[in-house]
Image (cartoon, rainbow, N blue to C red; front, side, top):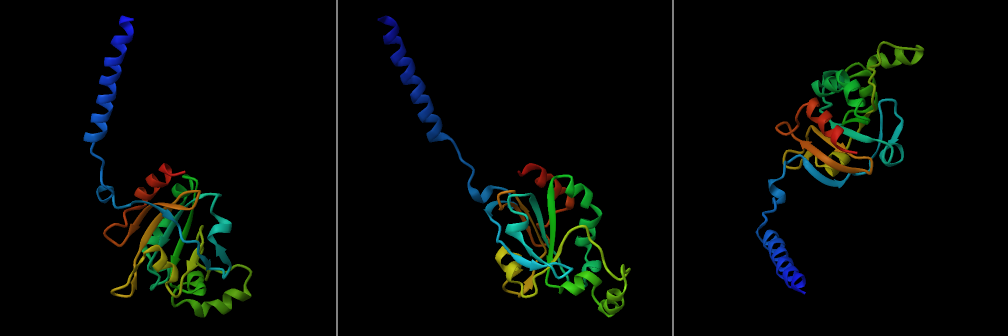
Length: 200
C-alpha cells in the first residue's frame, strides 16, 4: 500500500517536469533556419533539351532519382557560362551522390547544342555523322525561352525583369529540400554535393 502512495507523487513530479519542459522549450523560428533550407513541391516543367527532345520532369525523374536543377545565365551560350563549366567538370562527383543534373536557361535548344554565335556551323554539323561543332554535356541543358519556369521556381527578379542564377536540390518525391537563388546565395558545387548526400 505504501508503494502506491510513493508512485503517485513520483508520477506527478515527472508529469510536472514534462509540462515545464514543454512550456519553457524554445523552438527555433522558421525565419532563423538556414536560408537554403526549404520544403516545397518542385514545379513540374516540360522543357526541350539541347537536342530538341521534350524532357518531362515528372515522368522522367520524379520517383526515380534526386535532382540538382541549376538555372544559369545563357546569354553567352553554355560554353560561356562558368556555372555550366563547373557542373561539367564536377559531374562525376555530382552523379556519385545518386542525383541527376539538369541545367536551364533562356537560350534556344540550338544555342545550347552548338553554342552562342556558332549556329552557322549547324548546317555542316547536320551533314556529318559526328560533329566537333556540337557542345556535349553529360546532362540535359534545357530551354525556358519565356522564363515561365524561372518564375515558378523563383529564379527571376520581377523588378529588373532579369533571370537569376539558382540551384535547387530536389528529393526523390519531388520536393525542393534546398534552394540557392541569386549570386550571393548560390554557393559552390561542393555545397550542392553535400546537400545531395543528405537528401533521399
